[in-house]
Amino acid sequence: MPKIRNFSIIAHIDHGKSTLADRLIQTTGLVSEREFRDQILDTMDLERERGITIKSNTVTLPYVRPNGEEYALNLIDTPGHVDFSYEVSRALASCEGVLLLVDASQGVEAQTLANLYVAMEHDLTIIPVINKIDLPSADVERVKGEIENELALDADQAVLCSAKEGMGIQDVLEAIVERIPEPQGDLEAPLAALIFDAHYDSFRGAIIACRVFDGSVKAGDRIRFMSNGAVHKVEEVGVMRLKREPRKVLKAGEVGYIIAGIKTVSDVSIGDTITLDEDPVADPLPGFREVKPVVFSSIYPVSSDDYPSLAATLEKYKLNDAALVYQKDSSAALGQGFRCGFLGLLHLEIVQERLEREFDQSIIMTVPSVQYRFTLDTGETVTVENPQYYPDPVHIQSTEEPFIRASILCPERYMGTVMKLCTERRGQNPRFNVPIPGRVEIIFDMPLAEVIYDFYDRLKTVTQGYGSFDYEVTDYRPSDLVKVDFLVNGERVDALSIIVHRDRARAWAVQVCDRLKEEIPRHQFKIAIQGAIGTKIIARSTISAFRKDVTAKCYGGDITRKRKLLEKQKKGKKRMKMVGAVSIPQSAFVAVLKTD
Ligand code: GTP
Image (tube, rainbow, N blue to C red; front, side, top):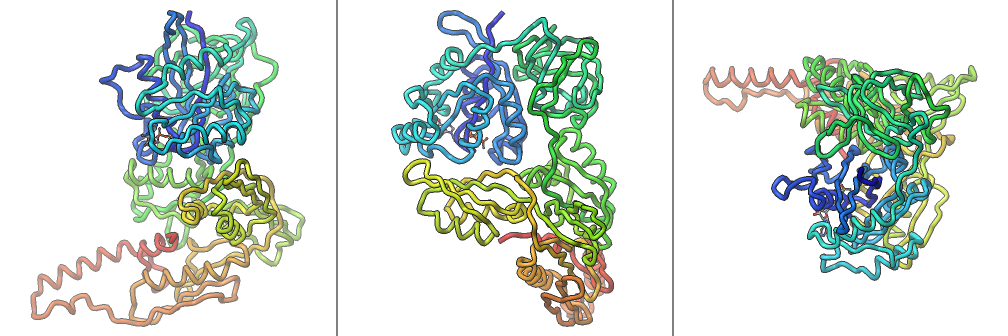
């Protein structure tokens, strides 16, 4: 039996995690050079394009040391973005050690720190690995200094490598074997396995990725999820090599997969403990929590006819993404749609892109919202994330909004601009750390609502790409909120309503009115566009009357050409939404959401 090591790679985005993973896969001979293709662990095309690892993935690497000893190295991949930090924490809880990958030219960044803290919380062995030493701009000494000073790790222990060029890979493998402890666990104890990932297979249903801490599990066992007591019969267990490889049994210390006839990944909770129904463990493994969406938006099909298709698509999509929640929603302006909850803005963007690209859906998404809290005069507290359910202002006693602890790491010279940006976004209580000379960590308490829209883009712009951002939701704080509605020719367009801080209301209203003015074509009458809080108008624009005669271009009497144009105009109207007597093109809804 080969000995086992369970490890993960943590790194800031783009520091080379996927490249190193691929190189380890290739070096250990799991795939031949010919089969080797870039970034094997990032299986989704979209991920490869965005360069972001979205879903965790696992692979068991067969490693034979130069002295002939055989090892099974379980590499547990982790998603690399703040939206997925809970998944990261469960993946790390399944390991004994991590490779902390730092780019030799970029040095230590915010996400590196955040992940490192999680690894430290789990008492993992940390092996610093300095990657990209082949780059001309590599500055190994500076990065070693950062590793010592910022991370308080022994830089002499750092392994140097170039994942791209294949330098130092053997050293990385040896360091894993020598420094990361062998997994401990009691084979005779009742089964306790930690679920750190799940994905959907159209033939087998949910495939659970787990780490067995105690006991063992095999096909035929009846397993129980400790969070909800659900019992399933195990069909197959095994390990992941690029494909699934069935095994007779998964034992304490091992990492592998379980298939148990579970229909969707929504029936599987990451962080849950699996035990045996007939011989359950007394306590679940620590750290379980239910993942809750924090950002909400409604999705509507561009053409109402496509609603059934969108419904079917979401159902299918959900099979593989337990973090997405949705329910039916409807709007007078946009018809039938769905209200969706996401882990964060990146998650929202991923869902949007995949729906459009993989599933070929044309959709409109409403302005993302967070979940607000209202205390009513009855004493009742309600949470509202959909402006449609904004309580009657007469009954609102107090309002609160979610706050985050935002941490931004950037070179010192950008401190002023970052401070300004955060203050504009209602940031409070700034704190600073200077982890090493020249770099500053700026910490603010900020409303979540202020970062879900375009904060990250703005940060990248003002820091010329050098700023990195990490956050966690901390608490709810009192806030002065209002609901802004938009009226076109006196009719409220519900899909455009938004809940915002009072100070933000006017600027937003002006922007939306201007954009609508650009997007809505002239009609035969004058159209007033208004932004309003209750009955108070806070912004307006006007579209003057115009008699649109598409046939005007047709000089002479070419009747067929005229008819064609009229046909075209009719079709165009289909993509319009009627609000009262005004037809609003779909593009107007999209334009309202555009950031620039
Ligand atoms: P995310 O998945 O976005 O977290 O990124 P990652 O950390 O997985 O980085 P990835 O492996 O995608 O590498 C990012 C970029 O760095 C790619 O363009 C790689 O080709 C490049 N890269 C990775 N390792 C090396 C290296 O050792 N040397 C050089 N020069 N480039 C490298």
